[in-house]
Length: 317
Image 1 (cartoon, rainbow, N blue to C red):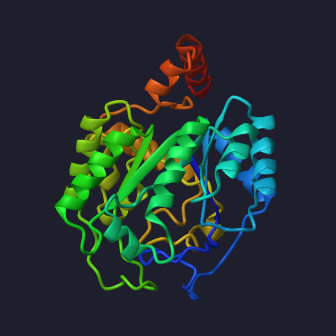
Image 2: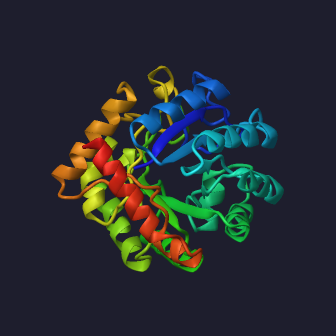
């Protein structure tokens, strides 16, 4: 379980499928303050989360200095908890500074491993630069997350094979896979959404290719099917990200239409998802949830984590 904090919906990119793209004048823009973010983190700690995911558009307001201050604020108060960033493309130096400040993981979906399709979907962006960012993140020492959308307009099975080959070569610690869902204020508004079946098929294939990967069952899956997240878990998913963002901004972080859970309080999100996981026949872990291969590589103390998890279980009970 990771607590998701969507802290800005400003974005300088103009990706044709995304509701917070630069050219969308209908978007109701917002930025959370440092105090707002810490309040979300405090709520997450009370709910037992050990990882916070700070996600936003590519917003130049959040400079290296601002992000470093936020990261240090969280780490000073909760030194044993993990911070995952999802802020898009930045320089090697920027990634390194945030890592040295205490960030643990970085999510940067490659979106598609087919250059022609990438270029069509991301005007003004560089296919090669996206890949280089992922390599930079891995070299710096982050637990790295790539990922792609399923059911994009003009996407073929060959394109999806390219995605599978790319993630096998990159061997990311995390891989975010979700269906394409159109947004009413984008150029792709009249296209069909990706299907649950094809998305869960890709989840299953990635699980087979990368047995240790952290594989989210996304909110987007739950948005196209009432039991989509459960089906994602049964297909190989092992991560869920309940929302910690203030309810006042959740509808504004609108990447696609029909997003679920925009009105739920943080505690409701936690209880709802935990109930769904249990009903699907699985149990919830309340540890940091680091990648298993990464922990072995870095000599992580498994015994200490088990003791910590047991203590938390007893406290919750």
